[in-house]
Length: 410
Image 1 (cartoon, rainbow, N blue to C red):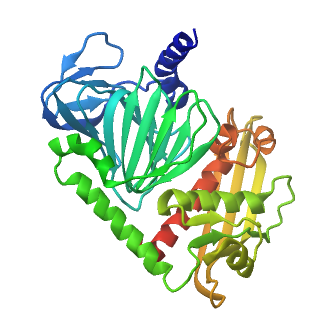
Image 2: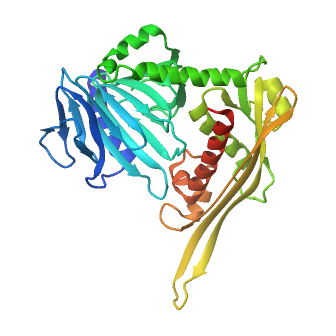
Image 3: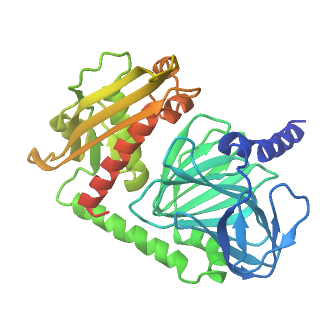
């Protein structure tokens, strides 16, 4: 009975969850193309029942489903330097769109079953986010990553290996999510809480030999990119027994008087954002202290990121329309932070980073002042994230990430 229930649950998730996460279709439009094909690749256009055959260079439309033959291989390309390699007997669904009220562009890939390798190129504009949904997992990354997913839709399992970069991984039935770094692997079961990842070894790469049928140089290229990044990180942390970059709790120098704990909240958001692109050398200070010295002693930090919140404003402005009795309401958000990278060995400032953003949006459903102020200060909260305050914070975090990566040459 339990096995029957589990199978029914898996098929319900496959059918419904992509729409719950990604929303309704926006209508057919070209979003990608087939870049490699050996054998048979079938395509099912959105809203149609019949399947037809794709060829190399076939243009792909919004919400197309693709199915690879049992003796075939294929590769496709989506916006944001997203390359998807498909093994034999694999089925996926693709979407690419701009997120509502944001400059973030989404590639959404649903894997129904089979083996897929995803390579996302490195580029400075990190406004692309790549989401992958399987019967057991939700995975996301922005850029500079190479990873594989093996999906068994009957058992509800997803096996993930990361060769390069950092990805976020979550079991769809549980709250916990983790960042999975290069040279790590994890096995997710739909009915179990996410477990600690394991290290990859050379034997694991045998499972990716099918990728060589499509691009013989790609796997080695991703490994080399990861090795270069890891060597750069070792150089940054050389000459010390400490091996972390710690984000300390920010000091609030703004005039904010609300109920949110913005000092801790923004510090955690900065650490999470940097961890996604740089890796697990980034941590939030265990003590939540503001001192680089404390971070060195308690958290074994080689470099501490300290700083202050200069401005934090979230206000509602009521404006009367000229020559009319109509009233328009606008939400305004202004955030400015100032950070310093400090060497904990000599307590000297390495470099300073400042980031700020001001946004004004009309108040409307999904962006109501009272509702947002009652939500938790978290980008994991959908209403908070989709409102003007979430958009402002994302812009500030992106600026911090880009400047830090530029300085560290990562």
